[in-house]
Image 1 (cartoon, rainbow, N blue to C red):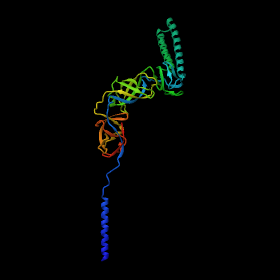
Image 2: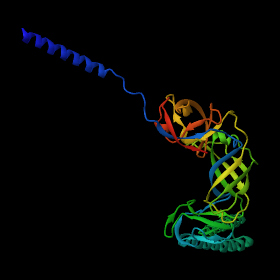
Image 3: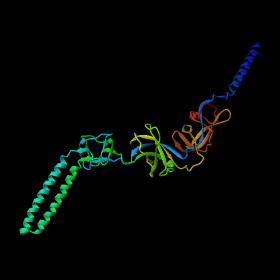
Image 4: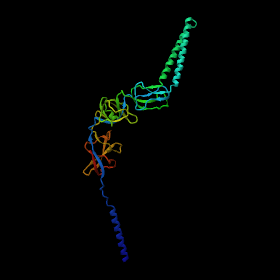
Length: 351
């Protein structure tokens, strides 16, 4: 009997222990999480709406690629990239063997036709031959003279003369190379033509630019901005980038030549959209629908709140967005790891 009592007591204790263990498993975990360190910046009114800043490449308005009008083997190339050349200066020559032979043959044929003409003239005067034979021979002489002139022109064309006074930008062909007619041999810059800087802009920015708008460019080698004006606004967008080229004609400047890259500021009209503010572009995060959003700070505990915005355009390291007031704090560094309503710790506030 006592054994039965002891057995019942043991079962009771086991059931109680199991129940206690079940209760412990049902206790919820603490909802307190360590705040995520982030950096923030304040959105600011886009006071620079009337200015567009972009990067462009310098070029001369006239930069011809020179070539031979006849095919041949390049036997002499007198200049290289960086050389200064004068208009009419011989830059390169083809092997003249073929053109010289054609000129000699044409000259001989022309001389023979002329001697025949003199003989026919004497015979026609004495009535030994018909006058029409003499006239026909005159036509042959004219044809031979034209052939000789063509051969002489081809002979001169084996030497390539500079069409401008300027600078050799690029040496495309090499001595000993067989070039075809029209194949570029050298690229030149006409130093007498205006100095330009070409800037690719997205269509929304290009639409704000007007011909004659003031602009300026800055380069690493220059200590100050070089003033200029917009002289061309491209109408066709690039098929690869979707951008349109804007040309700014710069005032003459020392140490600025073709190929240099500079930062261009263009005074442009205000955008059609209103309410845009400027934020660091790293603050942007994607929305599920493919749009853009940011995380803003909210509440005393600095919680991150997901906020949808409209991306108007990119300007350097900044993004111009709509749907966000100026002066609000947006998360920059760390935005890609934040969740909506998550508590964050601000480690740095950008100016």
